[in-house]
Length: 413
Ligand SMILES: Cc1cc2nc3c(=O)[nH]c(=O)nc-3n(C[C@H](O)[C@H](O)[C@H](O)COP(=O)(O)OP(=O)(O)OC[C@H]3O[C@@H](n4cnc5c(N)ncnc54)[C@H](O)[C@@H]3O)c2cc1C
Image (cartoon, rainbow, N blue to C red):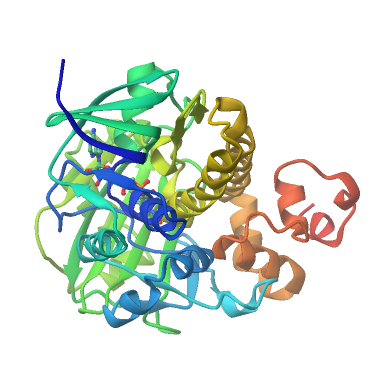
């Protein structure tokens, strides 16, 4: 029998943005919280462009002044480009349906994740690092998290382990998105030419119509820029190239990114990942909740990952508070959380499907002529995905309803 190393209300697996945010919010409720993080921070992580609608949750934890003091790059908008035609449009967050979310940050995740985790610890989270979670079980009166250092007994265990999907993997509940197999190759570079309208904007450039892929350019305040290519796995395999050669060739043949990378110097080795879109059969169980990438991950074209993770942490914290109040920690008590998470993922998936549709991107980059469409797109890009007044959401998710003949539908149709 393993030693019990800690007892707490909530045990969290993973000290990334989702885990730290959840820990901080629960401490603000007065709960006792343990976070188990297996890596030593600071450490590299991809996922560097934040969305404005994350700022509310980060504000609620009290960490925003520290992020601002950290000197991260301000992000006011997103620029989308069609590589073949060089048609493009900048979407400014201040012009969304909701005008209260004008900016976010571009962050190197090594210092950013450390800052969030340190903040959670400052609020009283007990951090076990480096320590890996290895298993879990649920008993009638507790949940037990097994780690390489011993057991942690908690009332609730939350899995915020990112794309390692600690719980879903053990439960065999992870499902890779079958028609969305992608590879990505990325790195940090010096001397990349940034967005001319605002050097803090992210640039997304799609190439090869719907079949091939897209680039991201994410500028940092130290002058370096994160550049990545995401491509269809089949297209990558057919190229017969190594990931690094594939990246170089993609950049060289790009009309929009090639010139921006003309004088670029890599800051280190390129990295790659594959098959990174999946979901989980269930997001909750008795005394169990999965948050962020641990539950689902979708194509990163709209920089939604950190937002979805901290937003889910926010929604989970609210349901956990209620569960402790009522004494009901069963799967049923968290059903509404699962519904909200699935809703958010569905909205982004619909938007992502549209991006991979040639005609939609063409309409996106010419949307200046269609002010309502542009506002609606801007809101989605900011992360305003639960906004019931956004007609584009109803249109993209096929929920039409009252909006079936709306102005947005007409503009897109
Ligand atoms: C190519 C690509 C580009 C992306 N670009 C963006 C972007 O621009 N913007 C954006 O918002 N998102 C982006 N993302 C997504 C982003 O990386 C994630 O959505 C985000 O990091 C999720 O945060 P998290 O806290 O849920 O998980 P993570 O950040 O993955 O944190 C999970 C933590 O859990 C720890 N852990 C894992 N297993 C265990 C264990 N067994 N025991 C203890 N600890 C454990 C890990 O060490 C890690 O620190 C991108 C993803 C990809 C693949």
